Amino acid sequence: MDLSAFTVVAAEGSFTRAAIKLGMSQSALSHAMKALEQRLGVRLLSRTTRSVAATEAGEELLKTLRPAFEGIDAGLAQLGRRSASP
Image 1 (tube, rainbow, N blue to C red):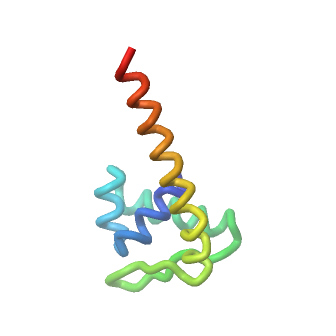
Image 2: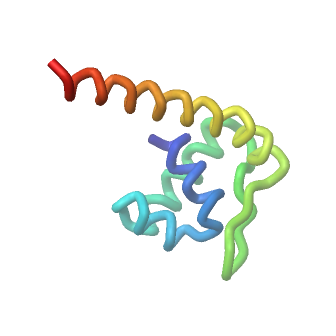
């Protein structure tokens, strides 16, 4: 969840918009991102009072995560099509 939430925060450029999209509070999302950064030992997001942007390390991680999540989404969609037809 934390990695997918990270991709949403980076795409939205805002904890508020990302939290709405993810259906969680801004505070919970912010804490989750801070915990992810601590777990990985690297800052992924640069925060200002008005926006959030991926750091260089965050951009590198996004290059790996985006195709992986796209592949997962495609696989789930294919599985959904199979279960829709008997």
